[in-house]
Image 1 (cartoon, rainbow, N blue to C red):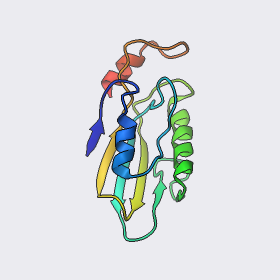
Image 2 (image 1 turned 90 degrees about the vertical axis):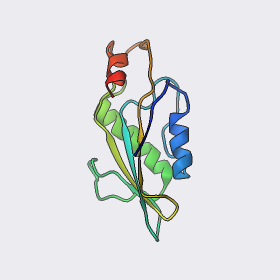
Image 3 (image 1 turned 180 degrees about the vertical axis):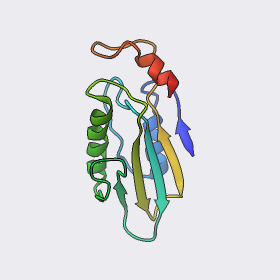
Length: 129
C-alpha cells in the first residue's frame, strides 16, 4: 500500500495517476481531495475498467476514466457534503492489464487555514487522516 501525504496542491494526485497510467482524479482550486480515496489496482488479462464497491452502484463498470473522475466527484459530495471533509473513504477498484496488484491512497492535502464556508476543524480533520 502506498499513501501520499503532503501539502495542498503539492501534486499528490498526479503522482498516483502516473502510477496508474491514467488521468482520473478530480482537479481544481482549493481542497479538491476532501476525503480519502483508496484505489485498489488489480492486474487482469482483459479489459480496463473501474468499480466503486462502496457506492450506490457497486456492480457498475466504468470503462471511461472521465466517468470515473465524475463518480469520484459525486461520491466526494455524497460523503463530505459540498465543502466539508470526511475520514470516510471512497473505494475505487481498477482492473487493467497495465497495472500491478497494489493499493494507493489519495489523502487531502495539509492546510493551516480554512477557506470561507469550510468547517473550522478542517485542519484537524486532515491531520487525523
